[in-house]
Length: 448
Image (cartoon, rainbow, N blue to C red):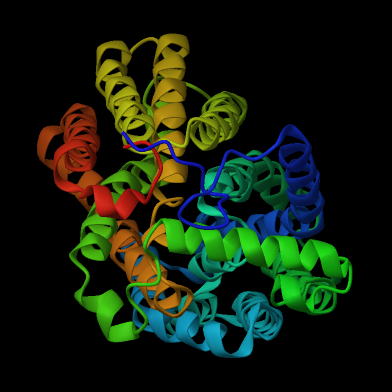
């Protein structure tokens, strides 16, 4: 296995000195603290605006007469808009930069989310959900592409883990915020609780888009908070990293679209996200079927979320340190599969089931983080924007498939056991694809 350093000055590169290693670590800590807190807060708001309809429907159903079918179709329409505009949005980001892109994305999705407070008919509901998907398209893959402009491949898994940590943390705050808003603001200024929820979670996205525009830099070269020496060092490390990993081979959007590795990683992402969205939509129902109250469900659901965050950070950091992706992903996916399969044995024991779901969350979250550190390794900057967006589009389609699949299997079998086995099998398949199908060229010069 090739363990050559990624920080080389040429073909005859030597190992970095301890001083250089320490200086680089301090430099990337500086970059991390500048970029990641704001990007993580943006991702939390992204989650809230995407999923708040799940809480809002608790009141909207009764007050507007919307059926479960209406809400189900609204969820699907969101992902249609998201998938159609994902790649165009990322291609635009590569041309105009992340500052203008986040201002556009967050401003428009925030306004559309806030406008949901005025929806009174199914048609209005569908149109706004579609528009939220259109406007939100490109956010997550755009940030993942943005990270490739700042972090070499051997530091990218940890940065990716921090970003996805926000997605894992969002469910912890989503429920309490929704519950408090819809309970204590219901009727204030003649607005219902669900209307306040859309307004108070939509407007902050607009404001944060403005903050991102002023705070972030499009690239290290344009960062006034980096010294000239630091800019040169980052540029050198990134150039050496791409050269070492052969990432200069492909330069066009068409090349990324024709790259079999991109499609394979996209399919692996789809298999992982099946588990993510299935748990997001159905975990509360699973816990409710065990006899838990709504309040108990809220507290129990925190445990898998916290476990997933911890695994994200630990596995991402360890993968970067060892410069190894293949086994970190595969073992994490298998752990997730084991957690889902074991849950079926404890459907009448809430504590044991939650611990199994926590194990599943740990494996799924860690596998997802490690997988997203791979694409930027073998794609050039110009191809990465399209390639990452294509991977995200393929994987994101699981958001439409997973809830319907689990619901259909539940209807057919009367429980969740069959769907948990299917999701477990999907994770095992993703692990096998990583071990035997993904070519070594997709992993650069990390350990295979």
